[in-house]
Length: 286
View (tube, one colour):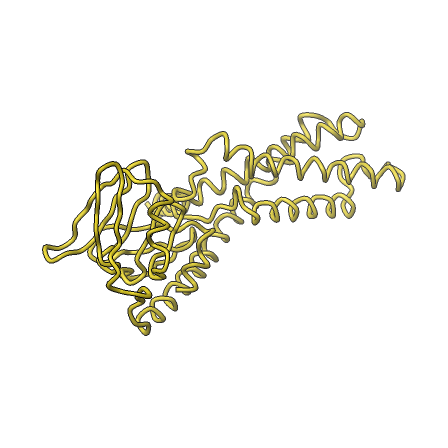
């Protein structure tokens, strides 16, 4: 029974949120870092038949292998996320997906580099590729779990600090708090005092959530995104998150943190806004 509980607990880690570095500068930097590690290990350990090579040939071979490694990392970090968007959706990224991504990278690097070395008569393909990939599975699993724990602790701590800051801050108002916001689109209209507006979900038909004497109301308007942004100029309490959510920062109940980053709980609405990692600085500046 204890073994079963341990297995369920281990499997549960794979369902926890995790930070994704795909389609980001961090992903590019990770690609450079992995390439540097592969090149350094190749020079130090000289696996396969690299020890047989003269210094000049060794350098050229290792640098080429490093270039192949970098190319495989870029494919995994940038091309695949564009081709399989549903899998790589940032809001649903988990430790399990992170481990899958790491294993994909390892498989690509193992296959591509050993095939290159095989073409030079230095490796047995695909046997060496399978051995190299197999040796990476356990370390990558440990790495994914360690990453999750470190990021979870980091963002939980930062979220607590941010909530304490928000408690000490007053209400953020527009330059003219009574200046009416007038949203118009395709014969529809919505007039609001700035701090009546709680948040907007942008789309082909944008959804406006606002408060009045009866509680919280919702209106849907077919209005261009840029028209909405233009109307909110001069109203610093509104922040755009993820590119499709506009939040009145005065309506933030609290900020929560996970290994994926920050989430925003909006007061008076049963809504949790998952913030893109690209927008984390906006949270930290609130």
